[in-house]
Length: 167
Image 1 (tube, rainbow, N blue to C red):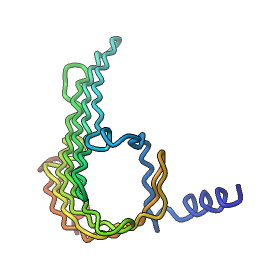
Image 2: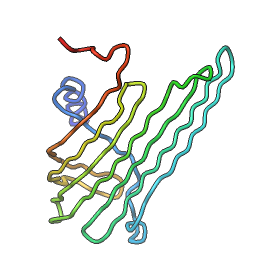
Image 3: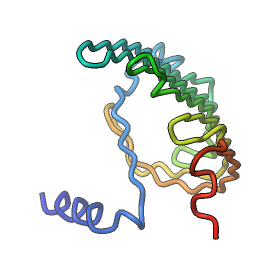
C-alpha cells in the first residue's frame, strides 16, 4: 500500500519528468495464442438535435510472435461531422519490431505516421530505436524500462493561425 502511494505521488507531482504508459491487454496464456493476438474495434455514433453529429472510429491492433521476433501494428482512424461540416478527421499508423536478445533485454525499432486535421497536422512521421529492459512479467502484467532515440518530422497546414508561435 505504501509503495502505491509513493508511486502515485511521484506520478502526480512530476508529470513533466516522466511519461508512464498503462497498456491494459490480456497477456497470452497458450503457445497458440502467442503466435498472433489482435483486437478490432469499430464505433459509430450519431446524435440528433439542434445539430446532427456523426462520428466513425476504427481501431486495429495486432501482435505477431515469430521466435525471438515480435511485430506489433496499430491502426487508428476517426472521421466525424457536426451540422454536415467535417469536425474530426484523423489517422495514426504504428509499426514496431522487437527482437529478444536475452530473457530480459530486447531491442526495438518503430515507425509511426499521424494526421490530424483539427490540429492542422498534415503529417507527423516518427521513427525510433533503442533497448528495452523487462523488469517484471506475469500472465496479466508487464513492467519494463525503455530508452529510444527518436527521429521526427512534421508538417502543419497553412491557415488562420499558421504563424502562431513565430517571432
